Length: 190
Length: 410
Image (tube, rainbow over all chains, first blue to last red; front, side, top):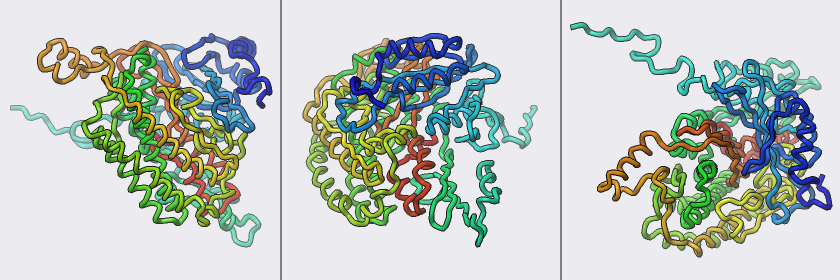
């Protein structure tokens, strides 16, 4: 809930938020940075839930987006990025009170071979579909997700299309001269 | 049959069993149903006409735009990016272009004429998109004539677009570094004609629908969502502003000099379908105000930056300068490199906050373009908005969330 002293709903300056999150992350903390667009924290998945809980208490109540990135062949390979906004509640009909709303980005780096990240669907109902989408396109599992099925692709789809080692035209879907399953016309020998 | 569908159909609790106290029916609405505004399937569990649960199923329009963008040069990716939210293609490309310019470090150099034209055309896109929404939403509710009013006006906007960019829908006119081409002669006359004509037509349309008893009866109190829930479900844009939060990316995180324009952010407090309806009607007149200001400013000068490593030289120069020809060849055959980095760039599309989380690995293609699809979150919220309503009201709710399935499925 917004604080009377702070119309933006964020009780502490952002650097304090980062310091607090760093503390909440504990061992799983990797690094923090002040980017041009917003501050960000990188961490390993086991620290995600404490950090998110602390973030929510600090006023960052709007989960804007969850996105995935595959950094293959670099390691750590997978990055799950969460973007939060501190959205004030109550009578907020004056847009001038909503200038330069605070945002925060979490970058979570799960394991390369068996990527698992805790789900946030319990905390934000809006996390349901983005997590399913990342499972569908990257094969990253969300532990505790109530309904982790493919979202955009058919259920019997093979592979994870947005992984960098997945070819642009799909698995077994490249061009085959003469058509797939058909015989290749024999080369005529003169 | 998909696993999700079979789980629903094979569940004995969900099948029709007359006389039972579990007298419910599973109905698959769509994906060809006209009122789903594209290819949405909603798995409904019904008790009579009452919706007990609604589970939207998406992905029918998934074309892998994000994957395609990773496999094109930075400049080429604009064409696929345009095609996601097909009612507001310029908002998509604006978001992508701003992100790429920021990564290149040229965001401060964009010429004023290009900045003003970008604002003018994204606001035209907003009006055009809202007109499609107005026409089709009212068609769902049973009002026919407003559709023709809305599409007549939209046609005028699309012919301006065609006159300037050569394309009615997927303009791909915004480029990294400015615009693809300057506006042709006679553009300002057409704009003035539109600016003169639009307020009167909008007033006509409002007079038809706003206090119309059919519209009011169908929308007031339907699909109501509280402020807290709107935030929990990730809503932005008109659905969020209809709950009384004047969150607009143009104000909260200004881009393209929006902080220098004078406009209001329309809000309502009821949070129902009618509030969203009125917010969008008000937004059209605010967009018109911004367009009028861009027309009054309309500075001269170039529309692209003068950097041959990013923007190809003009054709006239290529004909007699070897260096210009080499620059052109290099840009067409291998593009340009963008420094390593990542950025989240958001714009206020007609549907709400549309963002892109763009990662560059230093190469000539984007490493990753993650979309924040506004309609995706708004469609997901049907799980919350649908239950407790009649089927007919669900149609009104889908229309009032204004999803575009190119944006949902990408």
